[in-house]
Length: 130
Image 1: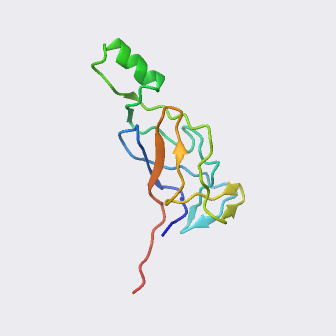
Image 2 (image 1 turned 90 degrees about the vertical axis):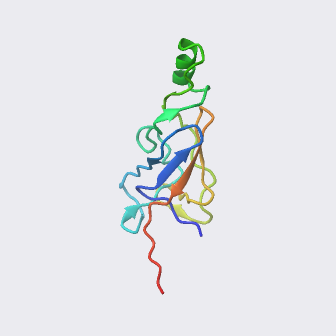
C-alpha cells in the first residue's frame, strides 16, 4: 500500500551512505497525520533534500577531486545533493495546492551525480485496527 510522503519521511540515495529526512515546508499544505504532505516540487537541495553523509559517485565534483588528489585511494567525498528535476512519477490522481503529491511506492528523485533518491519510510504513522 502506498502512502503519501510527509514531513520526516526517510530518504535513501543509491550513491549516499546515510539516510536523511525529507523536509516539507508547512506553507499552504495538505496535512496527513498532522504532518505536511510533500509534492513533486519538494526537490530543492539543502531545503527539502539534505546531504546523505558521504557520496561515492565519481560524477560528483567533490568526490572526483578527492579521488584525484588521493591518487584513487579514497573513493568517497561529501554529499552535495544536486536535484534539479521534480519527483517522478507523481501519486496517481492526487493533486495538492502546490502540485501533485508523491508517494513511497513509486516516486523517485534523480540526483545529477547519478544517484537515485527513494523513500524508505513515508513519514506517516499508521495505526492497525484489529
